[in-house]
Amino acid sequence: MSNIAYFPKPHVDQRPGKRERTKTANRQAILDAAREVFGELGYDAATVRDIIRRTGLASGTFYNYYKSKEEVFDALADDGARRFRPLLRAESEKAVDFPSFVRGAILAYFNFVATEQESWRINRPPGEQIPHARPSPEVTAVFDEVREAFARVLEQTHAPPVDLDYLTAACIAVAREIGDKMLERRPVDTEGAADFAVKLILGGLPALPRL
Amino acid sequence: MSNIAYFPKPHVDQRPGKRERTKTANRQAILDAAREVFGELGYDAATVRDIIRRTGLASGTFYNYYKSKEEVFDALADDGARRFRPLLRAESEKAVDFPSFVRGAILAYFNFVATEQESWRINRPPGEQIPHARPSPEVTAVFDEVREAFARVLEQTHAPPVDLDYLTAACIAVAREIGDKMLERRPVDTEGAADFAVKLILGGLPALPRL
DNA sequence: GACGTTCGTGACGCCCCGTCAAGATCACAG
DNA sequence: CTGTGATCTTGACGGGGCGTCACGAACGTC
Image 1 (tube, rainbow over the protein chains, first blue to last red):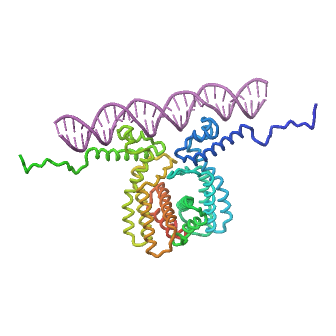
Image 2: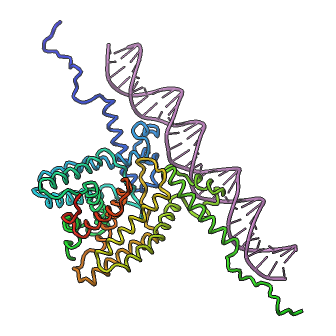
Image 3: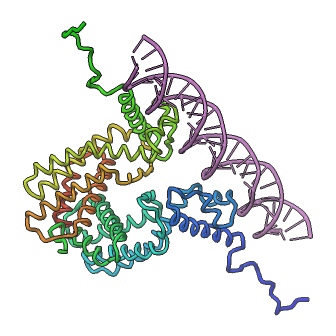
């Protein structure tokens, strides 16, 4: 009976089992639905049931994946940070000196948010405030990456030691704020915004570009 | 019967009628209660009924004064801005040049928030994000005041024209962010924080104070 | 193919929200 | 002082979203 040509496929199927697959699919479906719903109704008006309805899943299923609307929102921010991180890292490696790093990083960020907004900040109700996501792991990682890049570059340029926490916080705040304002203008000018932010950070007010 | 010495007090009592007085008293009571409740439970966990319960008023009464929890929160921000505005204006008039204005304004802001936090950010749950109040009239007024001060000073110093919207947005973002970080440190050092923020704005990274 | 485990389901109870009709309080005129 | 209309307060009520849980179906494993 031994048939050497017959190998009952041993259970090392590359793809994970169906359980695992539907699990990640559901998680992703909820994330996508949340993106849409937040975009259409705004964060405040959106409910957990609005999100889960769009997936066709039952309401209880939502809670198998996320604890609340807040958590799924944080997961969206986390997702964004995860996709942005490699771009930031690339800039960090490509940069030859501090100014080029700052410029590259900020420009990368502005281009990133400009692209993102097209895809999901579609239909925001006016005046709606988007809550600051509480620092999720990936977001924290991005912050740390910026901080480390600052530390590295400031180290090797023999710059005087500065308050790194304040510095990173301030630079990120500037980038965020200018980024938001940039998105409100038509046409969206990432180059111009980056120019402004970079010169402010590197040279302060006297270095700002003339209009 | 005419008695010239007798004037039945005509109804021009200086104080407004009782109706008006209880109205402002209630409005203030709700505001105070909200401050306490937000401080103790955090913004998210707080409910309209938590707030109104502390005043002894009925639940329905809350809605005679504010439409929602969000609105009373905005009213608190508005209140803060209203009290800060004269301080900012004083700095604006006291300042002799641009650097002294920036420094005075930022220091005033840091001292203001440091005082405020003692009085109502008592017991905040960890990791809680305070929502950015949507720009209420007074808050907008503060922003405009900063913007106008910038415009005025940049005009008379014959500085090259810059993007005023970006500039004010960026400076306010820096002040806010550094202010938040400052409050997390012990002891709270408003002078040091102001030093950092001012030098970053005026001279950029190269001008930052050494540690 | 049978068994144990994991996950999807949707009805349920809970709590909070915003409203509203009824009563209380106030302003004002006679 | 008193009557009358206007204004405010009250708390009970219906509506709706939230998070849970017992049940059943689908899956992995042997």
